[in-house]
Length: 139
Image (cartoon, rainbow, N blue to C red; front, top):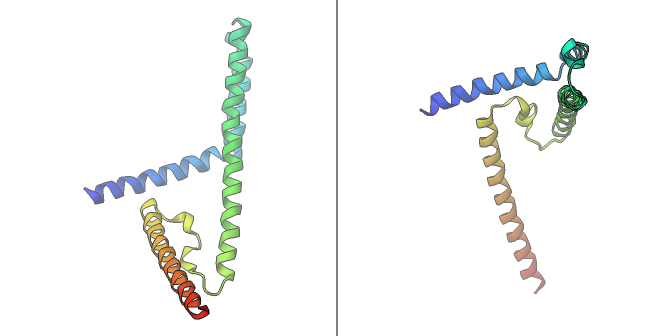
C-alpha cells in the first residue's frame, strides 16, 4: 500500500512540475492573452448587459494574472534556490547533499526535515551542557 501511495505521489509531483512549467511559460501567457482578446471581440460579448461585460473583463484579467503570478513565482523560486545553493557550496562544513534539494520528492524532503530536526535537538542539548559547565566553572 505504501509503495502504491509513493508511486502515485511521485507521478503527481511530476505532473505538478509539468503544469507549473507550462503555466509559467511566456508562450502560454501569449496564447491566453489571444484567447481573452478573441473572447472580448466576439459578438456574444457585445450583446451582454454592461454588468455582465464588466464581469467578463474582470474574469479575463484574473485569468491572465494567473500566468503572470506563476511566471514571477517561478523566477523568484529559481533565484532563491541558486542563492541557497551558493551559500551551501561555499561553506566548508555544510552538507552538500542538500544542493538542488528542490528536485527531491516530498517523501525525501520529509526525511531530510526529520534529520535536521534531530540535529537541531542535538545541538541545543550540547549548548545547554556547555552553558551549565561554564556556569559551574564560574561559581
